[in-house]
Length: 115
Image (tube, rainbow, N blue to C red):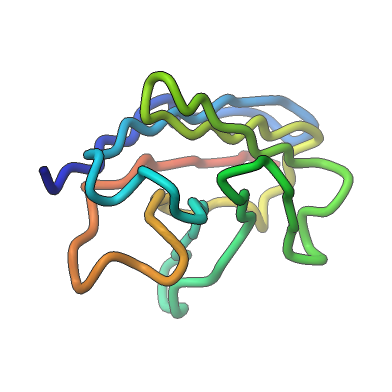
């Protein structure tokens, strides 16, 4: 099953927090590294955070110490807790496997941080 459904985006002030959720199809999720990516207007999509099946994590330098990725292997779900948000975090956030599952992407979750 090919499915990626992100939720939890929104508008928040600088310094605020948001939690993103993603439910993935089993063919994308099971046993794979899962990741959050983001794409800001006029920029290329970039990797934000990744988590292995046994829950080892790594982060882009720009979000280290502010974002936390987690996963629930019983629900095929991956989460991104975002704290101390900055205007430069404004982007559409996508979850996917790492590397991404073919050319398939979900609709993403818009995160907008106002200054």
